[in-house]
Image (tube, rainbow, N blue to C red; front, side):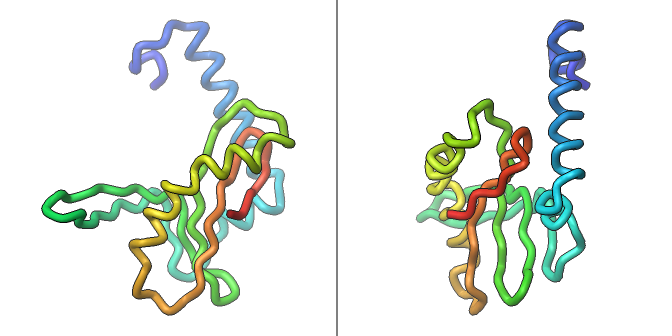
Length: 126
């Protein structure tokens, strides 16, 4: 797939290795397995639309589910950063997650917004 996207052999191999590493990190992590588990109201890569005046805006939410009476909206990110930098990096994604949260404005459930850093296996709640 990476080769079909225009990467040369070395780049495709490096990309595949990184994807495998992210998957292994997620599956060996209790938090990663919890994020992927079957939850009420759960969905992955859900497509949503909203209106901004006359403009239709498309959104794709990486992961949404309900756990312990709270709706979680989680975005997956692949970034190269130290664990100490991840909280600040997550804050940079707050506007995106708040746009997703606005889709649930009429939902009575409390919301938690979070970023799952797949390479580090770290969940940062905003």
